[in-house]
Length: 367
Image (cartoon, rainbow, N blue to C red):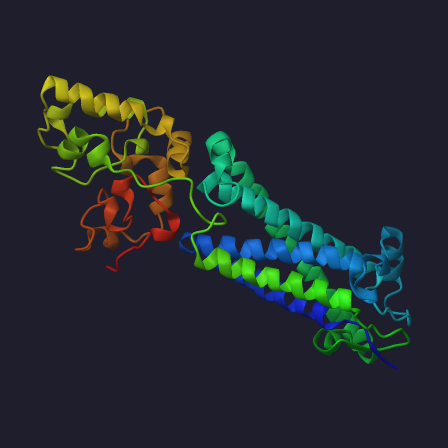
């Protein structure tokens, strides 16, 4: 008997989830795509919320009540999988547990992603948490990565289950039912009510609109809590003197001790004599100490402090964090005409002289 098991909204959910998860994996490979990754993550979160709602108000075989939730049944099913002839209109006991696991993991993955985006980057709806939880940013990132790994595990189990069922019982059309919704078995075909159609239309549209809105606008979903600093207005003396020989380095890129060491020996400033009048030196030193890394909750400042060794360092490029972040860049890049020196941060970080180092704005010139 040909039975319509998976309605269009359920199949659209499945297809959209596959596409969004694949895009999320691809955009996680580069920091330059972080905002796109976040936009897709919001979409995944919205899609999971829709599926949870659909699990209570959707078509018969998509309801959670139709999924056997029993570890004992799942184990029993697994033991008899080669011999059982029973067909399930919805998910079998083992598949049901995997599907519950995927939904819960996706929800936690979305939540930890929004938290990591807010706490580490100072961006998105939880960007304000960066101001109070910045020292724990690694915790949120690691949690997000753990749930990402768990998702891949459960997805692998899901795909394996579908392939095994298709191989053992090709007559059920398990794999093909994902495309057209039909299985060959004795069961009631589904038919959507007007309310279900409305819920599906609103829910799935909201997912698409969320992704588009987050990806194409500077909205609350991706906006940073940080803004550019006009050093020329904020401290003209610092901007004039420090930028006269080299690029302007934001004070937050070194701790107070490093700035004190650097300013106490301006006569031998990286091979040059950068001596200042006493009052000028005091004024600039005070400004550097006030806005040093200890005063900032931005990602680079926090990691510079955490990785800072006990020895004295006055060059940003000598800090462990800088070396770790730049270790994969080929040495010839730093010697190219567009960069010339490892100390020329603005060659790749366009906003660094405005106090910002944003992942999405990193542009490394070709050697």
